[in-house]
Length: 180
Image (tube, rainbow, N blue to C red; front, side, top):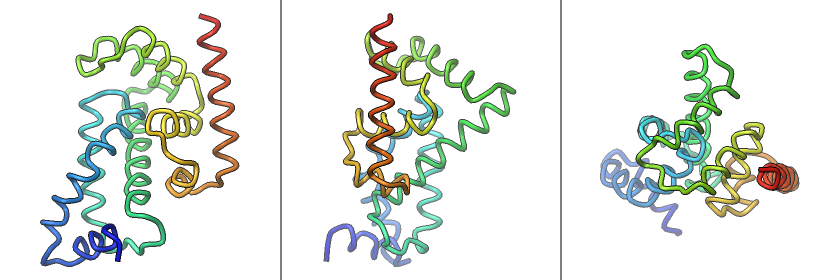
């Protein structure tokens, strides 16, 4: 029995759920934080989305069937929560998703939690010009160094499509950075 299988059993057992949840937080909190942060950009928004993600995981853990890895399932929830958050934020501000992305990137310079230099900021601006799916794929591959197999599980798509999407995204970013 793998550690992950054991953790899932503990999470699904009402007696050991709270202790197992603390263990899961220790294992996955930081990785999920950075995954969400790459999508929503803002530290405070990331904390909110992360909290919502863990609430959703806690509420729905009994429905986890083990068809994918726990990690992949949680990343899928975090991704969906992040995208929903951005969509709601854009609606609330009455702007398009593209305008919101641009605003988020522009705000990175003032974000005390952003430790990037001018080059990292340029890269973030270039990533923001990509379509949503390409942004996700690029961030997951470039920053989180996920394997295509893992990304396919999380995003529920083929490895071939992800490879093509990453290649196209990388070329677009390269062209943007070269033109500056």
